[in-house]
View 1 (cartoon, rainbow, N blue to C red):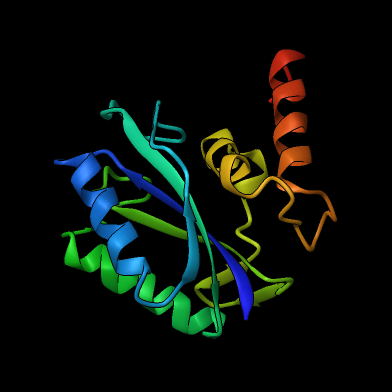
View 2 (cartoon, rainbow, N blue to C red; view 1 turned 90 degrees about the vertical axis):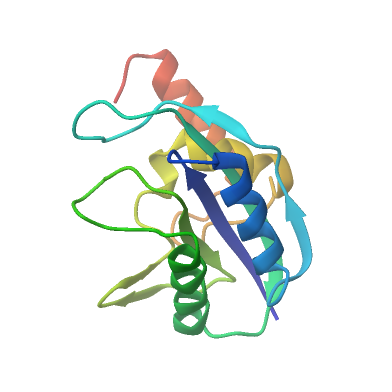
Length: 159
């Protein structure tokens, strides 16, 4: 069994309903599920104005391979009407596979750890709330350390 971290987000329609549906669906293949509270966040990297996001993170254990996990996440997004008309488009539901144990994977359509999670406070803050000691296999830092570094960078004016 590997410890799996997933980031959840929604900014279209019933945001809470979309996240609640995802958490329920994730229970089918993740055990010992821990769910953060839901956080209202501003859109990051959006092209044009977008509604606020509702974000969360879940951590659980799974014996599924990373590609199988990713396919399951994409199926849950599809159930909630996720469309991808352009990069960073608004979304009913976004499920990002952040970490799968100590796996480091670089394949078409699958990068682990998630390549941008270390810079995304909207991922790190909820993830640190449920799994502060979870370790990034690339940097060797815990989620709590990554969050602290992101807060320091924000406070110093760094990007």
